[in-house]
Length: 209
Image 1 (cartoon, rainbow, N blue to C red):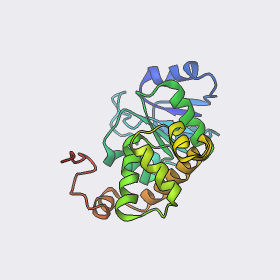
Image 2 (image 1 turned 90 degrees about the vertical axis):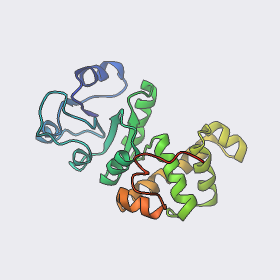
Image 3 (image 1 turned 45 degrees about the vertical axis):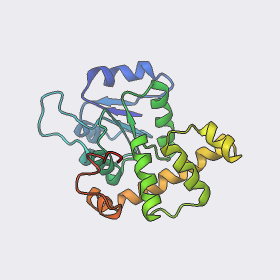
Image 4 (image 1 turned 135 degrees about the vertical axis):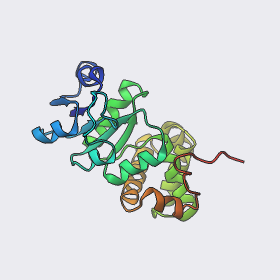
């Protein structure tokens, strides 16, 4: 794994906190990453890379487009921003508030070429499928997606649907991969139009009536 973050504590601390993961490079900018181009299964990327005072740095979706299998590591919660990063080719998003085992699990998922998305994007995927059927999911995949969008745990889903926990997780893995493919072909504006959302609704989700 390579780490790109301008926060010194994160950049230098993660190798000690996640000893099960081998960190081959830890740098503060995408430019440094591209100079070295390490043989890393995953690049853990901070979205905002201005903490060192530099202004001419590649960050956000442009940093994702630099290549590599990217897992976004951020405090960003705005769906418009996260959708833009997934559309640019990021393989996942994990929030800095998540416990370390969740981060390690997300890295492992992305390293295995699977997609990891946050709960906010799970809800957006469920909306895309429910309103438009945009991802051609099976009945079981829709059931698992709907349950995950409500925050139901995989173990509970498995018991309710009479399937194994692993099977439920595999269904969701297929859903997230299809959603990532869908986002690569749709800008945030496209998504708002397809889902019948007003301008800015991805950025500021509507409150339920």
